[in-house]
Structure formats: C-alpha cells, structure tokens
Image (cartoon, rainbow, N blue to C red; front, side, top):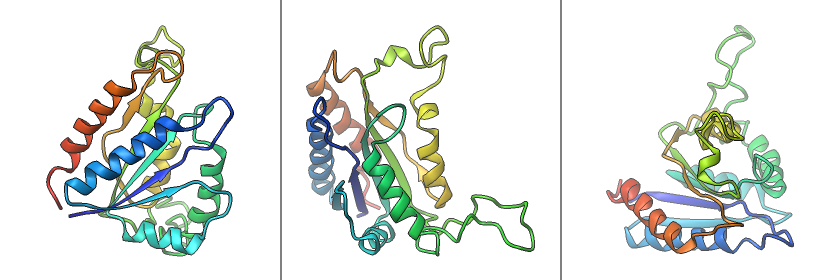
Length: 197
C-alpha cells in the first residue's frame, strides 16, 4: 500500500470552472483507495499551511499533480504554492538547497533532493488537440506534452523524485471526450498502481 498525495492545481476562471480537473481528482482518489492505497487530496486556496504541505509531501510515496495546462504551464495559484511550499522545503524537507557545496560550487546542481525513492505523475487537461504535439508541422514543432511540461518535471527531479508516465486529456474545450478520458484514466491508474507497494 502506498501513500498518495493528489494536488488539484486548478484555479477557477470564468471560462473554466474546473469540473474536469475535479472529476479526474475524484476518480483517482476513489480508484486508488479501492486498490488499497491511502490518499490525501489538496486543492488550491490563496492561503495554505506551508508546514502541513511539507509534511504531506514527506508522507507521500507518490505525488499526482492534477493540473490544467494554462499558457504552457500551471495556474498562478499553484505557482504561488510552489513559491511558498517548495521554497520552504529547500531547508531539507524536500531538498538541501540546490545540491552544491561551497567547496565545489560548480558541481551537483539539482542533486540535493531528499525525496529519493518517491515518484510523481502529471495528470493534465489541455485545450490543445493531441495532433498539435509530436508533429514538426504543427504548433509545438514536434515537441511532446512532456517537453512542454519540462519545468514541472525538473521541479520534481530537483527533489530527487522519479517520474511515472504522464496522463493527459486533450482538446477539452472544443472537442471534449470526458467519458472516454475517464475510462482511459482508470486504465492508466490501474496499470501503474495495481500492485500495492
């Protein structure tokens, strides 16, 4: 059995109320609990208890970041969360600074993570269709979803964590396929978490 922290990074906008991200969060929570895992969910609010959030990160064996792709990144409230929680975690809760030492200031940048042995997964919703990725003639010029989310991958790597395969719902505003996406997500979760650790 694993301890799994799900962070719903969605921020409410008039054109995007967050129903799909909420549904995916609830789907993961229920599915993972059925599979025997302990699950805690965090949603974005302007004020969070930083120490409590650090304790949840230390408790978790796996962190699932559920997020819309907003302007090629994550919503502002989650960026604020990172600025506050992740910066506070640099004293050892998540990492020891940036991993370098005064004796060797040019070596080991990004190697100070204290979350080794833990994993993370990105679960994303995006307006872009799947066809916009991995094709050199399309907008993202052949880049993948994981290329687009490279900064998030590097943040978790900074803590010493290992990635699980990314899940994404494409084209959610103009051609939503929510029911099919939920079926795919259940299969994705079962494939990754069916064996209790």
